[in-house]
Image (cartoon, rainbow, N blue to C red; front, side):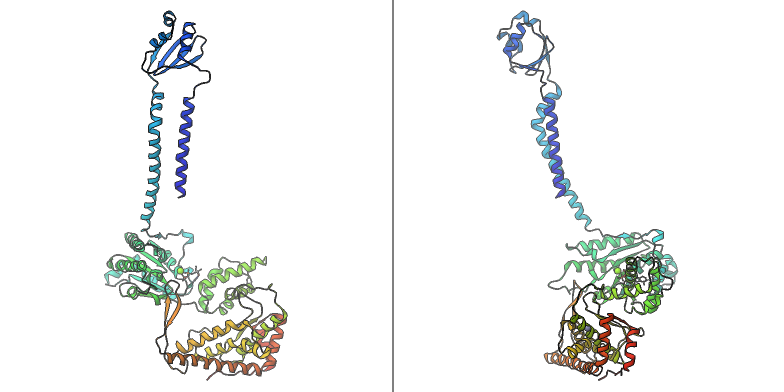
Length: 613
Ligand code: ADP
Ligand code: MG
Ligand code: ZN
């Protein structure tokens, strides 16, 4: 639309300049005198006229005093006749030089063309612009079908290789194999090996799927094409499919090559699962991927890499042998990998010489590679804000909390009473965690509000673990209820500060019953969880059990929570003096680190209990 107005403006200004030009061109000079034929006859009689040039119906007259004049005659009649009729004397007329001239070419054509052709020309011009506009629109519509495929050929110094990817050893080995195949396919084909066609990288967000794919691009000396599946999802049905076709076409024509489809779950979700009517576009796009994957033979040296963090929602057809039949799982990094990742990202940062990244790795279980990269960056920002030139250990620790809980909100003014409630609440969490044998040790207690939390108590597992037991879950549950219980006992009242704890506790307990088989209802799972296709969020848990069972589940959830809550209450009642002390110190110091906290507990000789029932 903007273009249209631009063109319109252009046309109008052309029109104006043309008419200005002609009107200027045709303006009569001021020095030229207009004469009627009578006046002309008189001037001839007075011998004032030197020359008359007849051009069409116009008479250009040159007077004796070198002035110019013009006069008009009727077209048909001869000028001499006319002048005679007006009483010009014959002899006077003979002295005048009379020249008959064809009408001047330009003048003539201008006279004819301007009134007739010019408007026509302008209209044509207008249509031409409009059509050109429309045509470019059509061209844009055609590029819809093009994939936004990118050939990945980073400059040498910014090339990512396997060295830039920490951990992920198995994944790297598998991918090395593939790179090797593309480099020397003969070796594999001669021995009769079937080369994988599709490789799926599976892992939590931020575990380095995209990074690893880029590293493959850097390691292999073959063309590496990169598309993001979300780019295939368009409003118009068929566009995605066309783009897929184009992407495969491009990659195939450059074979041996690698095609990387990032976030493939954007199109690869199970068909027929669309909410409120199918999603034709997505299905067509997915079908096209399947067709393309089947459509090239073994000798085409194209390998398709894809990444997803939702393998569970992928259409089973995608995972069938011959398609994405190789799956590489990218785990969250363990403690050693975390240290490696931190080292990689600390390479171009200024660290104090005594910084121990291992200590940071210890405190960050569950962090992904992306979280760790973010952590280092946050630490650098913190250090810069303090006008330091190097990052110290403290900034790194601070950054951990910032990444987990959001920034500190120190200047938020809270009343003394609120501060007291928060101190007892957090003290309750910490005390319960310390008093239960199966619980992880308390890592930090603070009543400084962060993000949405009024205060926080962090605990940290002593060692990495991949499995969690029922007792550990129950210990978590007790700790979650600790804040609520403390408020209840100390103030005989409850604040809204506990609401999030209660929600988490309830969710966890429900999972124990319905998912993990950790309740009296036995080793059964209840309900099938459906996902909202577009947001990937749980929207509804389909009930595949009777009302009666539903009631039993509710009762079991309540029974577990009640039991754990009673234990929590008894711990706090028994150790009320310790809670008072913790709260008092918290109000003074606001934050207690692990060592300070356990130092504080020492004189009280806290008796640990085991959680089991
Ligand atoms: P995703 O799995 O979501 O595609 P990315 O590959 O985009 O994750 O990772 C995001 C960032 O996290 C990377 O750019 C990198 O800085 C960092 N990262 C993740 N995993 C690793 C790793 N194993 N080694 C080094 N950096 C990593
Ligand atoms: Mg990614
Ligand atoms: Zn709490």
